[in-house]
Length: 249
Image (tube, rainbow, N blue to C red):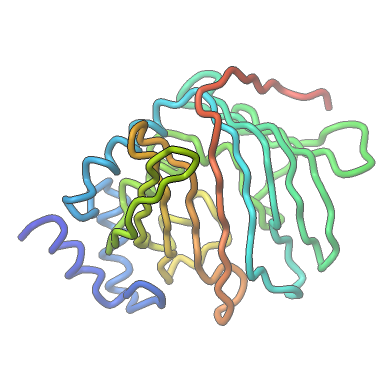
């Protein structure tokens, strides 16, 4: 049996939108976490080049936006974010930027720096950064997105149920759109609010010439079991000179 057929047989109960049985989810998770390539062979070359492009990058600019984020529930929700991600000493990763949050339905902005797996935040009005655990209040460390093999590239390499949405010209660049899904368990590596028992829809927009990822959408049940939300991560200015250092605390 081919790798694709084995993956499809193990994950058929999941479908593309809603979750399936625990057994089917575990089967898919085991294949993904072992690094198995489950993408359709026709797209394998492009996806492989994209994985290599991400994992070899030195820097990239990041912008995140969200749609259909529900109010209430008394939790912290990421609305938007922007900044730069770097690899100061691979495989470590770093981030410097700002996050726009909804905390108990009140909007606030944080400056955030992640360096050597330590996250520092400076709330609006504060003069110094403080060390925090982002997961403890429902956030994620943006630096994990660029980590080799476990960040965004792991979503690309483990994309399943791939559907080709065609090629568009964007600013003179041929951009190929592919859609599919990954398990919630895999998505949770970079988005702690992902439901491990339900798949996360993925949409990729890839520069065909450079294989650089321009955008990735993650759609799933991140806050409630009834509401689907989407995070769009836009990546640009790959490998331009940038530096992130530890802030004063």
